[in-house]
Each structure stands twice: as structure tokens, then as C-alpha cells.
Image 1 (cartoon, rainbow, N blue to C red):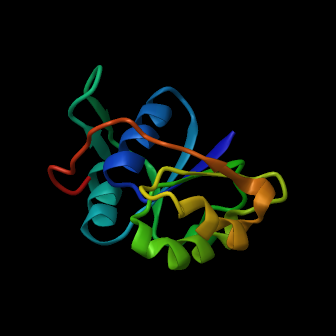
Image 2 (cartoon, rainbow, N blue to C red):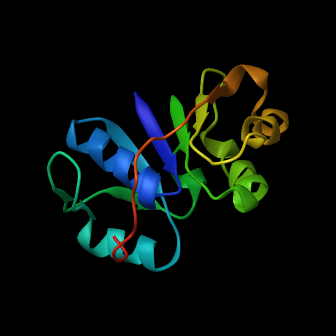
Length: 135
């Protein structure tokens, strides 16, 4: 299963790192200092059941370079939803599912017109995270 993590910060970085550490085919989408740090040093998770350091991760700021995926973990702040979701069109295949881990009751309603009713799976994350530093 190929998984794209849109938004590789606290929630996306945490769940994506856990899945990658377990052997899943994870492709992170990030920007700015976080993207640069992940390209240079990988991704680190300091808390949780065990610390993780992934020295090399698949990370990009251009979803078109990933190709089609089976699942998108959508972990973007609500105010960036439209731009981020539209940028994911190149990774979407007819079978691709999208799980939104955003805050807000309207999040899935915002994604349905972009991805279609059949692609959206509501999600919720009960994990407290923070970004101590990029990467």
C-alpha cells in the first residue's frame, strides 16, 4: 500500500513516521524548513511508545512527483484545505482513499467536492503532538 502524508508536521509526521518505521511505503509532503530538514536528516519522533529516527524518508513539496497512491493522510490546517487538496490531484487514482485528520466538523464537507464522495473517510486523531524543531 502506497500512502501519501499531506502535511508532515505534528500529526502527519507522527503517524507517518510510525507507519514508515513499521515498513509501510510512506511519501511525505512538506514545505519550508521542515522539508529541508527532512531531506537532509530524515524525520525524528521523540515521544510516544519509543523514539524513532528515520534517517532517510521520501519527502517532496510537489505531490506530482509521487505518482498514484492508495491512501492519503490529510493532515493540513483547515485554512489551507482547498490549495492543499487541489495539489493532490496527481496522486489520486480511482481507488485512492483520503482520511482527513483535520480539526473542524466541516472538514469532510470541504473535501468531498474536490475528491468525490467515495474517496473521503472521516478521521480523528487523539494524539498530542508538537514540533520541537524542523524534521
